[in-house]
Length: 192
Image (cartoon, rainbow, N blue to C red):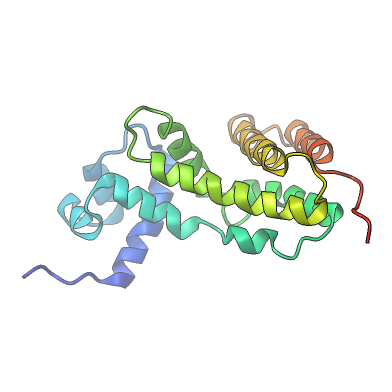
């Protein structure tokens, strides 16, 4: 009879997976060194997660913010601009900072044909674009293509955050974030 899962231990392992990949990278991820880092065995990692890829996706799921909640209640362009500008700081300095380089690596790995991360990456992008599209529709229902604008904002922000992680040029990247936000979010309010 298989050993039942210790859910507290599983949660600790997932936290350690994010820390390990943030420090060592995804490209050369091997279960044995990861297991050593986590104080367990590769066999136990398979017991808890099934595959290396499933383990990584589970770890990322623990780090995903509640995206619909981040964009709920936004009823003006000014609030959306403020929230997006603040999200740059959250993603580079705040609670999600340790997991963001891991997410960026997974998104890159999802572009490889047959990637086990494609479904996770596709769903992550869809959640963001859907939430942003809803916000843009609330702000200005006359916006010609809110989904395209949402895609521009989400992909642009992701690229700028990746630029910051690579270059650490906070001033230049933050100016670019502000420019992207100003150009992509309509400034007029719909009539009341």
